[in-house]
Amino acid sequence: MHDGVPVIRRDVRSARWWARPLARRAAAREARALRRLAGMAGVPRLLGWDGAELLRSYLAGAPMQQARPAGRDYYRQALRLLARMHRLGVVHNDLAKEPNWLVCEDGSPALMDFQIAWTRGRRGALYRILAREDLRHLLKHKRTYCPQALSARQRAILDTPAPHSRLWRATGKRLYKLIARRLFGYWDNEGKGRVRD
Image (cartoon, rainbow, N blue to C red; front, side, top):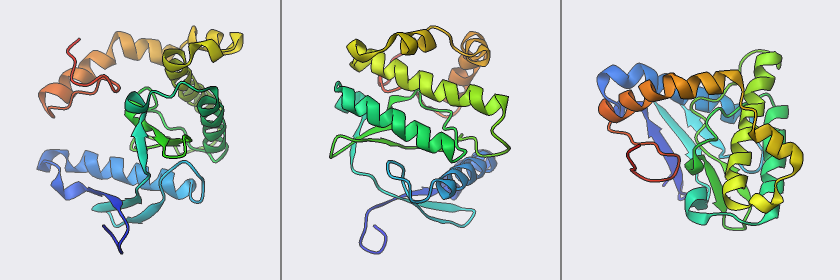
């Protein structure tokens, strides 16, 4: 609680000593993204960042893997949310994870966890590739929960992941899982729970 209101607090000092520089960098990236998105509905508000502790507003709702949004309207609103975020120069970069999508109490979408968001530089070719991957990840969730609403164009986007995404799945993702699971004890299965694969 902060001033009588529930908030989310991320304290870099609670990370293991050797992971603190990474934790600080991730929190700084989140603060930068939330600052850029200030006033936008569907994302938390940045309440404070002092280099050690990040405070952001709490959004009431359920993560996608629990709420399982099956209505077309949720995905229409989610597409608009992504478009607004991209117009403001932010790419999320982590929308494959269902827990980063929230279904708010009114049924609207919200985005969480901007720790690896892209906010730097101009919106050139790399920016457009990353933004398209944000969109493709949303469409993957739509295919899971509301497949009948996918358009032919959306199916074509799903069928053509970016080259860096294909390379990541073939190489880096395995290393990431090894490090995350063995060193940090963190099992990220994009909302599927602690499932070994």
